[in-house]
Image (cartoon, helix red, strand yellow):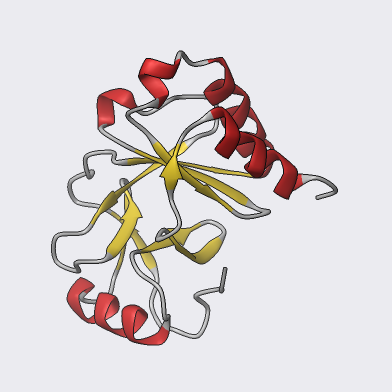
Length: 145
C-alpha cells in the first residue's frame, strides 16, 4: 500500500453517490467484517472476492451481496477512469480521467482503490474468491498486527 499524498488534490462529496461494488473496512472494522464473512453461508460468500493487507479488508461483489458491519464503507468503479475505484460518497476534485491515468502510470498494479481516510492507494488485483481457506490466510496475515 502506498500513500497518495504526493498528488495535489482534495476530496469532495460526490454529486451523486456511486453504486456499491466493494465493502472497505480498516483496522477494527476490518476484523468485524472478517468475522461477518466467516459467519455467512457459503452460497453467499461464493458471490464475493476479497483482498487484504495488514490495515484494510476489501470485499468485492454485487451491491446486494456485499456484507455490512458497523463502520464499513463502500467503493465503486469509476467510469471516467477505468481501473480506478473510489469511495461511493467521495471523489477527487481533480479531473478523474487524469487522476486515473496518473495513478495507473505510477503504480505497476491495477485496478487501484483510491481511498479518502486514511489517504491510500490499494491494489485490488489480488482479490480471490471468499472461501474458508482465503479467510484463514487473511487472518494469518493479520497475526501480530
